[in-house]
Length: 195
Ligand SMILES: Cc1cc2nc3c(=O)[nH]c(=O)nc-3n(C[C@H](O)[C@H](O)[C@H](O)COP(=O)(O)O)c2cc1C
Image (cartoon, rainbow, N blue to C red; front, side, top):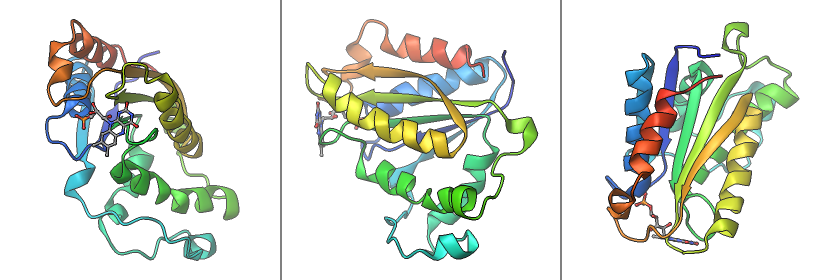
């Protein structure tokens, strides 16, 4: 079922107009072509410190770190579709994206410790995608590490993992443009979003 709604694209690459950012932008362009509203967050532009495991969020559901992550929580809860994009760094997602995801511990606490309902009824059946590129030719094992991280945060956010766009052999900036159909596939996937 297609539900027209908000698509939140979150880019973890520090490389502007790099391979994953270009794929994500095409995905969002496709989503807009289908009538969705989109928002792109380039995490490298924000100050998002890592979680310090202070435990405050387990008491009151609030993160005490006063930085740009504070404005992200509502965006995560209000989106109908979430797309994470990250290069593979040492077999996982980038530090920028990992800090962002670790700070979702606040939402984990609200859901599992404080027993809050995070997602309103009309937002049920949210879905999400993962976009990634890696330099290695045989990058399957690297993607696997990143996918586990993405599936874990999607589970906390009540988001069904709908699919992934993974491209190995993408070492240099712009390599993705030379791929015969990667950008077109990203556009089409965004255009065909469904819950
Ligand atoms: C710090 C760093 C770590 C990397 N680690 C890996 C890796 O473990 N495996 C791999 O195949 N490529 C690795 N790469 C290559 C990137 O994944 C690849 O260049 C990717 O296409 C970059 O995406 P971007 O242009 O969106 O930033 C690494 C690159 C950097 C800068």
